[in-house]
Length: 238
Image (cartoon, rainbow, N blue to C red; front, side, top):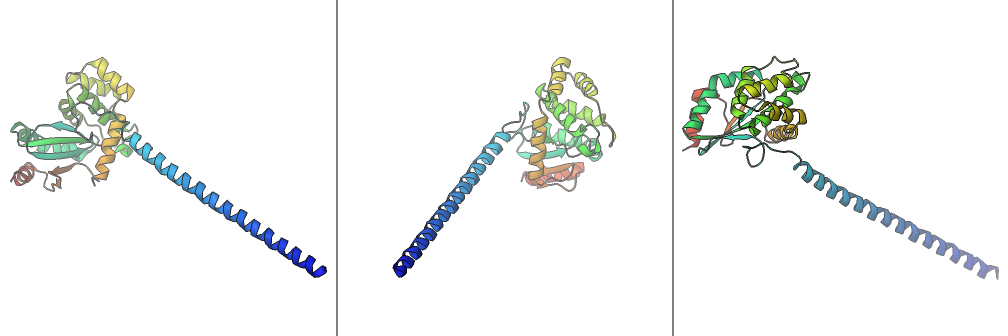
């Protein structure tokens, strides 16, 4: 009897162990399934977030189809011009070669995409690069982007300063023909700050690491003199 009882007890122990193993296995697979569900949900959530994030900016009138810049001209060769309104080298470039690019536009030789990036906020105590780029978006809304851009470079504040105040930006806008109330409201509401972030992010993704950067039909132009730009445009048009 004791032998049968021992075997019975042993069988009960084995069955209990098997039951525990089954429960443990079920717990493991339940946990794995939960993790998989969370991972899938996270990926879906991230995709939705990225999709929504890409749609949260408002591009001003006259922007390119991808919203990364303002268009000027309709020639067969594309010049992508990346500049920061806080950048002294960009001001110098405009002084030296800006008229040449304007001439190429008038001659219907080029299509210019101006990308007002905000790389240099660290050189301002008020994020002037972002504020001025967003202000340029407001100027584009009023069909005065080019005129406003020219004045921003002409009145460029020194680096490591507060930059131009919003009221000074409004005065510049009014000076080039923009409506004071509309332009002021656009600045105050930050209408194009998200657009500025989009322009800057996409420039970084395109490999732009400094300003000014000039690309002709997607190729970097090292010689940014008037002669160098004309030569690059002529070569791209062949």
